[in-house]
Image (cartoon, rainbow, N blue to C red; front, side, top):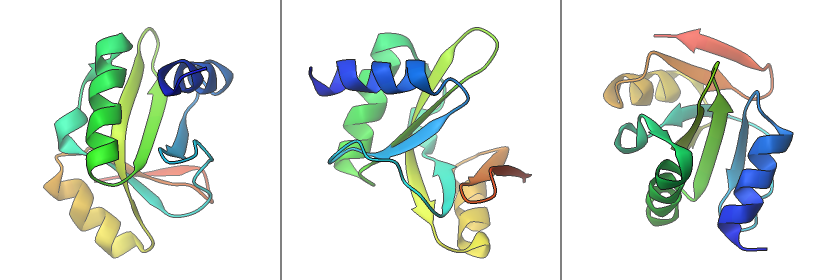
Length: 108
């Protein structure tokens, strides 16, 4: 199974969202997640390919989540403190950032 197929499988198993390292597709277990501005509104197969390419060339982390109809893919940046994540979220035009350990969103 190639990386695209495996990511689709992970997405199907985790429709509420996930964050993985692109190097081994293991889950990121801690930190604040900020979506990279370059991959906003990436959905479908083309969105997955773009988000994966950006993630491989930058942060080595990728996430996804499903809204009512579409599954969104994001190259993401992991921060280990809220202040840096908040600043990065604003710089990347995000409306919220996500804290993995507490499973919560912080709206910006």
